[in-house]
Length: 217
Image 1 (cartoon, helix red, strand yellow):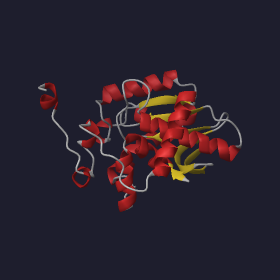
Image 2 (tube, rainbow, N blue to C red):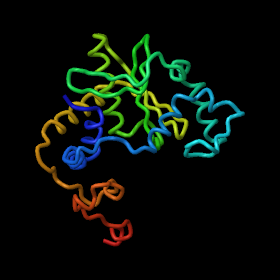
Image 3 (cartoon, rainbow, N blue to C red):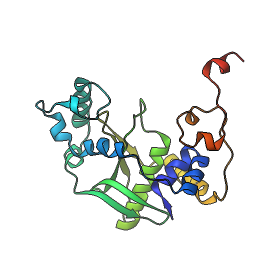
Image 4 (cartoon, rainbow, N blue to C red):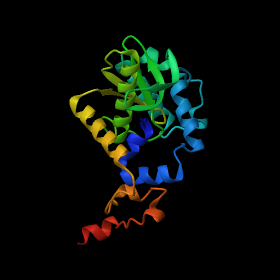
């Protein structure tokens, strides 16, 4: 049984998952909670009387309200995202378990809230794996298909739909195999930008090169 977060980390970097397990270090930083809490206050944040300058948003107040307004106009389940039937639900599936920050109903769909920055389009692959894991666990519990999940980036006012495509399910199964197979440190990544911000960089010993040095080759 794998944790949703472990599957996401295995997709991002298997070696990072090894170090997290070794140090039993899987909890998010305290700053993450303040950002995630934004996802439960969308109605208030859209109110012009709310001072967004005091909130942990990553854009200007004008851009933030514009992004939220766009999500409200585009998503047919906005009302449920603002006022979800269930919040912070622990899901246990056939292969994985973890927290869905929101659960929608009729049709059922889990919501994962990310404290980070969204890509220009779609979702980052590790987060897509986490959302897929939540959707499959919810489907297992309810004994009914779950065709989509949602990923929210509340610091940016962005909400993305994650559809359960064949490709996405295959990536999820690959992450399962990777996480289950880790019994020692996997190979290091080479010259990868992901290593620059990794908290295990010194212990891992991965060498990174600057963009200038790579271009000068």
